[in-house]
Image 1 (cartoon, helix red, strand yellow):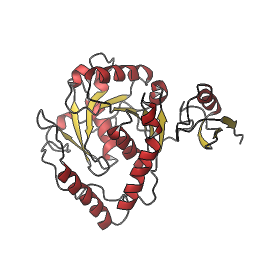
Image 2 (cartoon, rainbow, N blue to C red):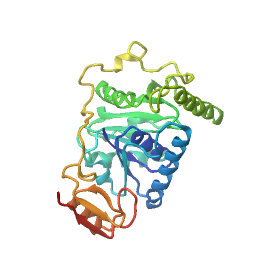
Image 3 (tube, rainbow, N blue to C red):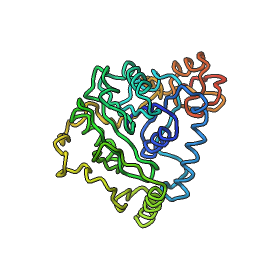
Length: 302
């Protein structure tokens, strides 16, 4: 279980968040657009229902938890990875990533889902440029295992190794961009891959067992492999990460420190410590799970 922040609650950001939650990770989504955040629950439920109908999950519910937050400092506090998924505007991406880095732990790995923008320009003011990398998920995210890796000139092998470990444990396949143009699947290719993913699971021995192993290959020849091209960038050692991909259970979903000991009323979600729940209530912030108004906070004693 890894703590991950997603910056941007648009179509790609939400589906990337859902894909991580699908595998049981703790996800915090940040967006300054409250309408996007307020609609996130319904959009996630729609994806869960679709994956359930397709047979990719046994129950219409992701394993992980998704929290929707409109304060950047709450979203990136104590996370191990940040994935930026906002619109293709270099000034906006640069400003958001720089601000996120100020609130996040020093060793956090920051990934940008940019399609064409200059990664060195985006990261030029970061204190730890070596922890920054381009990682572009292909749409539709749940059905396409490939993730396009695009290192900046400063990206370290440790950063690539940590990202690779995270994604390969989700049966994602990293590949390097083979030209200046990104790989984009058209509608027909997307539908072919969606059907192939569903069929591969139906033929497997169980749900979430075979993911992406029998799908038709993409055209890129720069897939990362233990013996393939660009392997010089991959650190295969046991210390491949600047961050430990922790399996520890996290307590309060906001501070990640104190134990959960409060119920948010009236939705009855039990995800925070009393101090953080009161902070949300006093700021008039909604519940981070369902985005409903917080009417009261009840401390639970055990």
